[in-house]
Length: 247
Length: 326
Image (cartoon, rainbow over all chains, first blue to last red; front, side, top):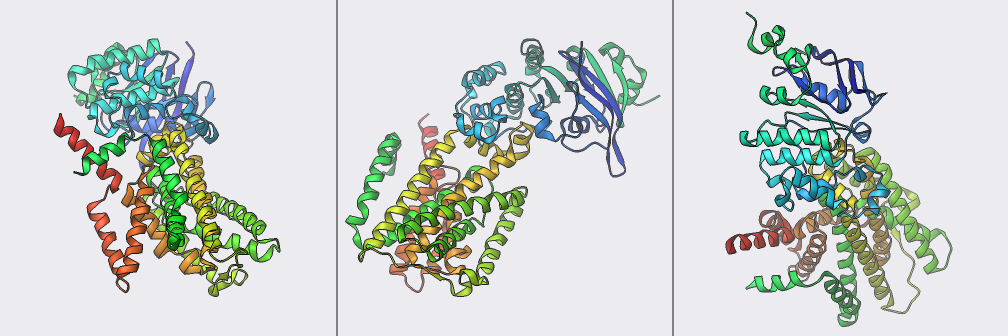
């Protein structure tokens, strides 16, 4: 399989704190990859570095064969690399349908194309994706009135609406009702298989990530600690030490 | 008691409201010939509120400097009328075109400089812009400096000037309304709301946020520039601080009217402008000497009791009744 995302020795410093220290990881096209690590190990920082939220201090990010580490958020997402946030970000004063409609690929066009398009465009696809995440009956509800878990689902649907090649999900199950988590795993897998979206998932719930990911990278203190199949990572003594403390 | 009336209004199709409003507006100066100038100023207020709401309501950028585009419009038309040597109506037409163009260019330039600033900082920066413009105009001899500019006499018979500018101002307000109505129905309108709700998210979803903000400001600037060119002629005299760049009156009123009617709605600013203008004119007529105090009290009352504006209050009321009925 071809490499879709190739992170090469990315370093990000905040003053004296090295949040990412020469981190490398690869995501192959079509797979579901996992990113784990204890709190403060630099996972979300790495997401920001990949998606252009801030400039990196070293290393390079190759997406779909081209370097994107010099680009900002907008150009990167328009190339098909989208993300969701740990603390959900949706448009609170807009209905779910409007949230979906403005997230479509067509909305990323220039101003002239936005002026030509009716606000109600891409209705069917928006409704289908809202059904997919189980929010269809909430479609005329304001985004800000949804529960935290529902907002996460909406944000996931919005990301799918933009038809990304690669979607970075930051803790998709955090704050979601435990009984809904199985449904969410199923949806992530279906998005991967049926919609062809490659996924890179940050997850704290080990049961979830071990079932979901084909390949996992573990960070600790900003460095890559281990990387491999779920079994390899789970049985790596360094990973156990990082989570449970060394003997 | 008020609810059946509101229900009735809500069920009326929008085109019918527009047609009736259009007919009333066309007939008004003939029904109330003594109030033609006040009515023309009413349409100016409608333009003020609507154009302020593009950024303030739909985009979430509170601008206190929009009056600058109005002032540029005032002077551009006046200079064209003074210096072009063309017949009155030719000079006026060209002047209005120049006003719109210069306001547009100003919006693009200031937009590039200021629309990267967010929240309160943007509000303060635009406030400074409006004040600076007034001081600059008051010191620039080419446009009359502190003594202002007088406009050429209208060539028609007595009373025709007021009527003429009434209809020009009405046309600007109407075209402005219809343009914004169309704009809010496009995906551009949704994009503005997305930026208002979460600009970082909008950017992270690939929207061209800078271009969207700048174009939105430019659209309001064009109508403000046109309105300025006409307003100068309606008044017959342009003072740099009290007319053209009058932040303390026009600049504040445009914000108030939009808030009173309901920010971020199509009809809110229109309703707000009408209510505000009528109230203000009544104060000037019946509370002379105390009119500014009364206006101040009104402003406090608006912010206290109608923070969501008339449209927001109506929506709350409907929600409460729907909840009660269920």
